[in-house]
Image (cartoon, rainbow, N blue to C red; front, side, top):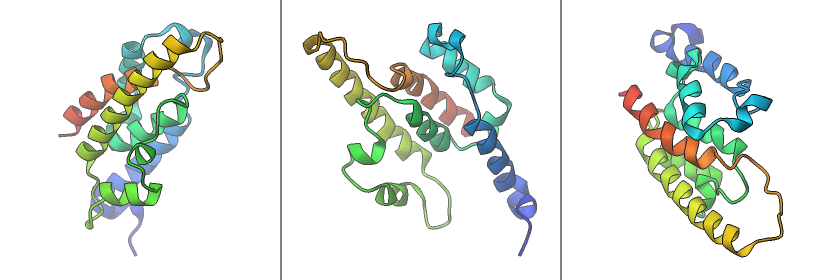
Length: 151
């Protein structure tokens, strides 16, 4: 067996290291980040050193971990299991269909914006939603740029 750093010119190893950095990214955690717009957050993400080594679908799905409850995960929106969703993205050769992931994520963000407008109009109770409400907008700004850079 070959070391990960020698397979495909070291791309898998670079991605593994980049995902580690991505997991510890704190762009939404600081007190200063609460005043940032979705475009500013997306620009900061695009400026990260590790972003070039991570597949767009990985970054976009990672951002769902910060999402509010009303923003459905892609597999929930398709009403399939996470395993089935992954099998729709990963080809037999191991490559990932980032464009399919992006289309599903756009549909999730669109549905979220519709739900949020309805809930905002009907709920005056001041309930606190979990997650960052800017994530859908960040995804919309970031997705097309990540796909463009990946080509």
